[in-house]
Every structure is written in structure tokens, then in C-alpha cells.
Length: 431
Image 1 (cartoon, rainbow, N blue to C red):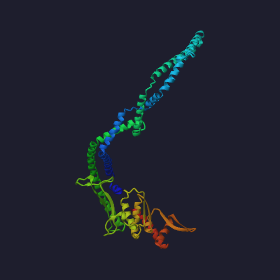
Image 2 (image 1 turned 45 degrees about the vertical axis):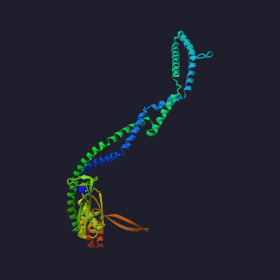
Image 3 (image 1 turned 30 degrees about the vertical axis):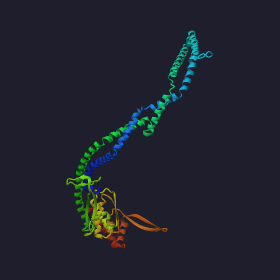
Image 4 (image 1 turned 180 degrees about the horizontal axis):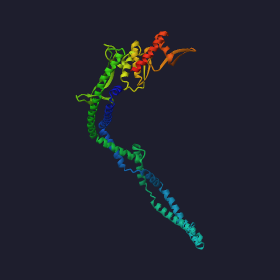
């Protein structure tokens, strides 16, 4: 298909077709998901509603769990917290008959330092420092009294906090590792519910768009097919001409277009609907009948050998500019042909080598003479091992090799080798 499209110059048509094809494939994928969702919509809607209602009923806020844990700690340890706060207040501000409180003692210190500063002004900073300490201690005592009043002995509230934490733990097991994850789950569930609820509307919208894309795909696919069919007729004539040159008169070539009806396929103007894929509305196959009366058969099923090599040579010559393969290898292309046809084959290989790297394995001297580079391959036994040696031949070595390909090396075969090289050079330049 790629060779035919390049030969036809249909790349732009294929690109335009491919753009619509990709849109249609994406749309059908979304339609399939929506239809599947619609079938289980009732069950899905019930589940999503349950999940959303359960999370919303909890009325969570992001920092709630840490705040509840701190409150639970305070409630569970209320007695100890009150005792410690009371002890601190007693030491700071109340004291006992035997032990004055810290604030009274610090007040005495403040009076002494203030007297010191009056007599020695350099100690004014010490007096200010003592005043700050006294003020801070007084403020600390007030804060502790406020805290003591806030300490709550409330078993009922402790039970409420425990229940709330258990609820959060239950929601975390179902919906996420923390409260933000639970809230995110609820948001996604609401989005899915919106999608499922309106799936019917979206399906109707996409079905309308699918119909438009299918129509456009059919139009673009038809133009692509027409371009291919026109090119295939031209290709058939050119390849059959090449086969005649290669001593295969009567050989036939054709491009088989295979289209398959599909009720969901692309519509044509004649009312038919055809299956399609990324390459178009048809599949193609190259057909060959090497000899008259044999009937056209797929190229891939033709037996290997020299005949196939000549078929491929004809095909490659016609498709030379459309074929992006950098290297081509021909083996046994000389099978069943004589010297006269060998010159024609050699000339065509030389032409093909203007656009590709061509390697040809041959025993026919008329064909080998056309090579721009001649490599001799031979086996040699060394120390009990068989080695394959390959070396480039030129000058006299090449003449000798060509002469050996004709038989015994003699004045006559060497002269024939020279004439072959001259003929090859002349034919190459003429082409």
C-alpha cells in the first residue's frame, strides 16, 4: 500500500483521510465508554449518590482530625492538667505560710534593684530587666488561671470526640488516606455523577458527529481509492513492459483491490458502506502471472528463484522513486536466462543503482560486467577449516574472473570479457 501510494503521489490524500480517521476512532472510543456507562447507569448513580451523601453528611474540614486528636488528649487528661496548672499557680502567686510565693519574692527583688538604680544610675538597665521579669511572671500567672478555668472535666464531650474520630477513620478506609483525599474523592464522584446523568445527551451529540465524520471519511476515502486505481493501471502497464524486456513475454501484473461491506462502515454515494482502517477503504495485493495461462496469483506466493528475482527487478524499476528501501539484494536473477537477456537485466540493475544500493549475486558474466564494483567470493580450506573469502576485483583480476565465468581462461575468453565490459559501459552510458 505504501509503495502504491508513493507511486500514485497520494500521500496528501492519505494524510487528509488519516486526520478524519483518527478523529472518528477517538469519538467511537468515547461513545463506547458512554454506552457502557449508560447500561450500568442506575447502579452507578445509586453508588455515587451514596458516596457523596456519606461524605457530605460528615461535614469534614481539612484540619479537623488533628484538632480532635488534641482535644481528646486534653479531655482524657483533664484531671492531671488541672492539678499541674494549680500547682504552678500556687507556687507563683499563692504560696503558703511557710513558703512565700514567687511573685512576692520577685517583688522584693524588684524593690531592691530599683533602690540600687536610684543610688547608681548605671544599674537602671538592671531595674528595667527586673520589671520585665516581674511583668512576665504576672502575665504567666494570669494565663495559667485562664487555662485552669478552661480545663473541662466532660466525659460526654470525650465520647463525642471519640465518635467523630471513629467516623473519620471509617471514611479514610473507604475514600482516602486523609481528610483532603476524602474531600477530593467526593468532588470526583460529583463529576462522575454529572457525566453519567447526562450520558444520554452526550451520546446523541456524539452520534450526530459520528455520522458527519463517517460521511467525510467516505468522501476522502473515495478520492484516495480513485487515485490508487488510476495509478495501479499505469503501474500494471509499466511493469508488464519491464517483464517483456526481461524475457518474460506474456507475463501479467495487476493490483487487486479488496473491499469489504460493513454496516458500520464509511458510506459511499452509491449507498454501500465499506469497512475501513487507517490506510483507507480497501486492502490491496500485488498479483502476478509469470507465464501465459497460469492465472494471476499473489506475489507473496510466487515460488522463489530467478523468475521471482526478475519480477522483483521489474517491480523495483517501476517503483524506484517510490521505494524508500536503501539497499536491494538480487540472488539467482540469472537463472534461466541467456547472455542477451543478461545484458538487459544488467542494464536495468545499473539504472536501479542510481537510486538504491544494489547487490547482485550472479554466475552470468554478461550481468557481472555491469557492476561498478566486482567482488569475487570463493572457499578455501586452511588447517582443516573451510573459510569463505571475498575480495574486490579490478583490472586484470576482473577480466580473468569474467573469463573464468565463461569457461577456461584463454585469449578468446579474455577478449570476450573485455568486450562485455565495453558493452556494459556503453549500455550504461546510453541509458
